[in-house]
Structure formats: C-alpha cells, structure tokens
Amino acid sequence: MKLLFKHCDILAADGEGYRWIQDGYLGIDGDTIDYIGSGKPAAPYDREKDMKDRLLCPGLVNCHGHTAMTLLRGVGSDLPLQEWLFEKMMPIEDRFTAHDIQVGNALALLEMISTGTTSYSDMYFETATAVENAVAAGIKANLCRPSQCFDPQETYAQNQRAKESIQLFKDCNGLADGRILIDFAIHAEYTNSPHIVEAYSADCKALGGRMHIHLSETKKEHEECIAKYGKTPAQWFRDLGTFESPAFAAHCVFVTEEDLAILREKGVSVVHNPTSNMKLGSGFAPIPHMLELGLNVALGTDGAASNNNLDMMEEMHLAAVLHNGFTHDPTLMKPAQVLTMATRSGARLQGRSDTGSLDVGKKADIIAIDLTRPHLFPNIAPLALMTYSAQGSDVAMTMVDGRVLYENGEFLTLDADKILHDARACVKRLYA
Image (cartoon, rainbow, N blue to C red; front, side, top):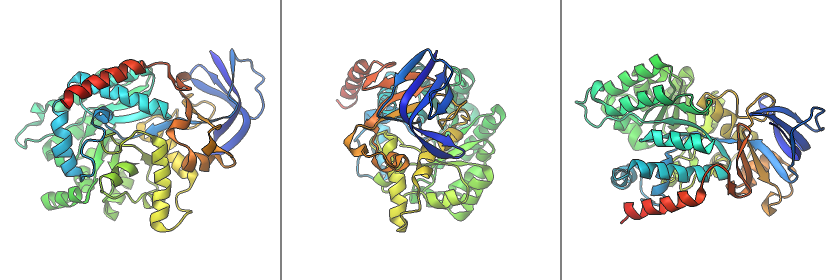
C-alpha cells in the first residue's frame, strides 16, 4: 500500500544534516519512504493522511539496555554500581523465570514504542523471549545473550552462556525481514575470564557477528582491571581480539587517550548513557572529545533499574545540556549532533544502513511529535525543540517499516492491558 502524509512538518535528511520542511508531504511505498517535499507529489497514493500539527522525525534508536529490568525499576536506588549490581540486582534476577523476562521485556516495549523508539539494542538472558516479543510488536531489535564466566577453571567448551549466544545467532539472526538482528555480547571484563573472552571473540569474528560490551563504566572497574592485568579494559579487550569484529561499547566513562585511540583505530562505537551513569554516580563519558576524534557515538538509556525510564528524549536533552554545562560552553553540543546520536549514529552502530534518517529510499521508521502541546509552541527551531523541549509523552505516532505500532495513545500491535496485568503478577511474586 502507498500512504501519503500531508500538511506535516518534517525533519528530513540533508546530507549528514537536516532540513526543515513546513506544511510538507512524505510518501511511503510499502516499508520505504518514496517521496519528501514541500509540494504534493504527482504520483497517486492509495491513502492520504492529514498530519497537521505533527512534526515527523526519524525514529529513535536506543543502543544499550536490559529491557527485562523494568521489573526492577526503583530497586537499589542511590547505590554505587558494584553494590547495586551484585547486592541488589543479581539476587532478584536469580529468581527471574523465562516468563518474568518476557513480561519485563514486553513492558519495556510499551514504554519504548510509546516514546518514539523504533529500534533498540538489548543485552539479557532468555533472549529468545525478546525475539518473540519483537517479532510480534513490529519493532526493530539487536538482541544478545551476554557471555559471562565466574569460574576461572571453566573451559570454553563448558561455558553454557557462550553456547546459548552462538545458537541464538544461528537460529534468529535476520528474522522478520531483517528487523531482528542477533549480536554477540561480553557482559564486562569483571564478569569474565580472559580465555573465555578470547575464544568467544574468535567465534564472533568467524561467524561475522557484531559485539556488544560494557566498557570502563566506573573508576573502580577501570582501576581494578589495571591492577589485575596491567591493562585498561579497552586494552584488555583489544588484546583478546574482541575488537576484531564490529563492536560497540556502552558507557566508556573512564577512558584514557590510549583507550580512545584504540576505539578509533578499531572502529568501535560508543554508547553514551548519561542518565544511568550519573544516577549511579559513575560520572559521564567525554563525548565532545570522542566526537572530535571521529568516533561514532550513539545514545542509550541502559536498564530501567538504573535510569529509571526508557525515554530517549530525556537522554537527548541530558546529552546536550550536561556537556555544555560542564565545559561552560553553550555551543559545544549542538542539537543536530544530539539528534544524530539518537538516530543515524545508532542505526550505524546496529548495522542498519537503511534507516536512521528521513530520506527517500530509507525505511519508513518515523515518529510524529504532537506540536499542539503547550511546551512545543512556537515551533520556530525544530532541532532545538526536539533536543530541549520535547518529551517522550509528546510522541503521537510510532511507525516501523511503514507499519504504525502506536498512535494517539493506542498500541496497535501489543495488548497493553494484558502486559500490565502480567507484570503486576510477576512483581507480586518476585517481591513477596
């Protein structure tokens, strides 16, 4: 079917930048954008939809999270990462069933889809449940089952987590016409053994996979790695072959100049998680310097237990004002840069060259912002509006591959009432 959006404002691609079209038209043929312009196209469309008072933007790409942790939202607040993770998170996660994880992921999908996320990257176990949910919901997802090793005597052949990860890649990569991509993942240096990481990294390279890791999230992690191995985490991963595959690293809060040189040389993308990093007192990554060096920097929310929401609009806002405030330079992080981090750069990180911007030939991954909200008037600078004013609750429509998943408060592919009912039951059991 061919669909034409009319009388809408559009933040369309203009090379690597953006152009603002007012009272414009955007045409979709099946799952692909086939027209963008200020005048009505001559070609006929099967359906026309009036989008007056709507700003069309590229869908947001959330590049790091642990979606099932929505069921842990609020637990262990105001604790440093190591204590939060090992003393608060893991004891409850040990009681998670596959059903709990599926429900927690579904709850996260409700939150992400309704706040403008069209594609997300997730690191968690029982990953097949997330695959099933994503296929049904219509969202794009890069999913992975992380490799971990807590017994240094365990051999690679004995490591069940790595086996599950590789089997998931073989079974599910490319499902749903490519909407589902399976990544490899190493949770972190401090939850692994070198021989496991080296062998698993070699398998990732051999199978043509993409690697998702946590890297130098805290000063403690960074310094303990140096004390243990005589190397920073970035050097440790490089020497074990992890960066021989396309890789992306969440956090990168404590990185040296040599670490940054390694990331640049190996083409490793960085995922900036400002809310999570500051809530846990970890600090924040040197994003402006990374951008100056030419690193591909994307945005992520991290899990709802450390954020405590999955609203990418909030991450965009914080990524802009945080670095400007810290450096006393209001020109440092420009709105266009921040939107690119949340869209194009995220799509590039995920290996999705056909999305991330509103351009003819790109997939129709589109969100519509409701410009009738008082805090979005007047719309005289849409890039600034998206970065500093817009909130997740302003999303009036979320579309993936030309299919509307959410519109005007209604979920069209998910049963929100059932998901919330199931989530209440899970929480009641987990916290009894």
